[in-house]
Amino acid sequence: MRLVSYLAPGHPAALFEALAEAVGADIGFVTGRSGPDPAADPFLAGTADLGWVCSTSYVELTTERTPSVGLVGISWIPDDPDAHGRPVYFSDLLVRSDSGIRSFDDLAGRRVGCNDAVSLSGYHALRIEIAHRGHDPHNFADLVMTGGHHHSIDRLVAGEVDAAVIDSIVRTRRARRWPEVADLRLVERLGPWPTQPLVARAGMPPEDVAAVREALLAANDDPEIRALLAECAIERLAETPRDHCEAVRRAMAELGPVQRLARG
Image (cartoon, rainbow, N blue to C red; front, side, top):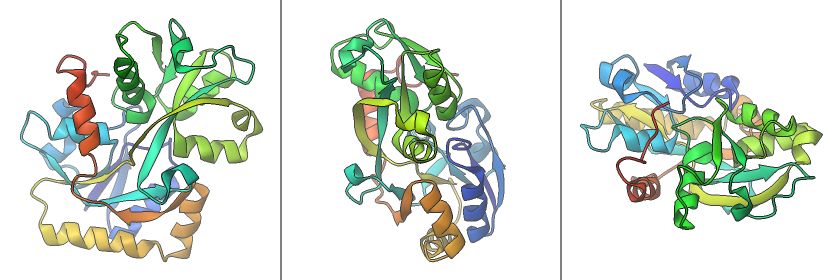
């Protein structure tokens, strides 16, 4: 089997390498985009069997086209009291401690660091919230693509952007290790949203998908993987329901066909 991760380096490559080994798959990485470009879809082409992607990418690959992927039924539960033991996370709106930004509405006209044009927590969660508050996602704020959550954090710390929207799990991990990240001020948590799913190529035999799911649930008992999960601010891998990403599908549909997924 061939597994590709679109979630590194936001989450460490070592985690995905260990998970690939647990299911007996070769692994590759694609950076700078939280899921495949539908015009160059490795699942449709048959060059990838499994993939860790953002839920917005899963929605894009299964909406208004013949689905190229399905859910394996596995994601993760973060080490975050606000998750309440569920496979959900947040888009954390962060500013520097000395910033005059005190509320979401204070973002008007400001430069906000975003992950990439497919990312949920690092882009679309912000656009969805802007629309919910009655503003135009296209001109409310200057959304600056940085190419990754870590880049967004670094640019915020350096004063190159006024705010940033960050995967809450990534933020927790970095805040535990770097005081300058811990000092960033949380303005608001957007969400909760479903944590990133593992997808399987459409047409992959159901028994193979089930075997992958069971292998990853069993991996929770592996000491090396437990340590990697803990280092990543993740409690454990967990089975997820078939509708795990439906809240994202509904929210993206509300944005409308033109605004749904930016091509980056």
